[in-house]
Image 1: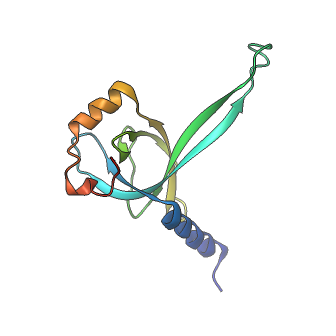
Image 2: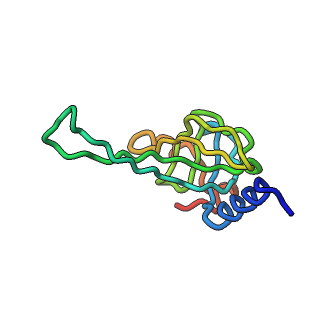
Image 3: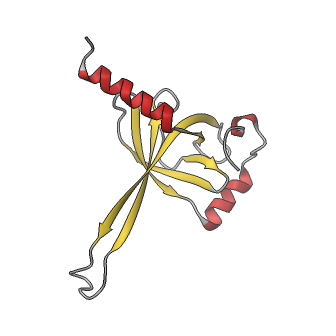
Length: 134
């Protein structure tokens, strides 16, 4: 009989294999691309304004996170990049420690000029980017 931790680790591996998307991890724009499989999570939190602006409605905050497999990216560094497609690139913030082979990292979705600057520096014709969407 396996322990609860073994069962939980197998379940997490199954979820990661089922819902993972191909991506590329980069420590910096000119770095060596590391193909990996990630899961993108978005936590949606309602924020109420009853003390600041009592007559206005609340709003939603969306906090994206990325789940890494330890086998793919053993040590995700802050300020590195995860490329899902040419229009979906994340900058990594704080990463939680690995548990059961997986870790969650807080990320920021790049947009505008920063996205264009990174895309302009990357050769998406390279073999490492074959599974990444355009």
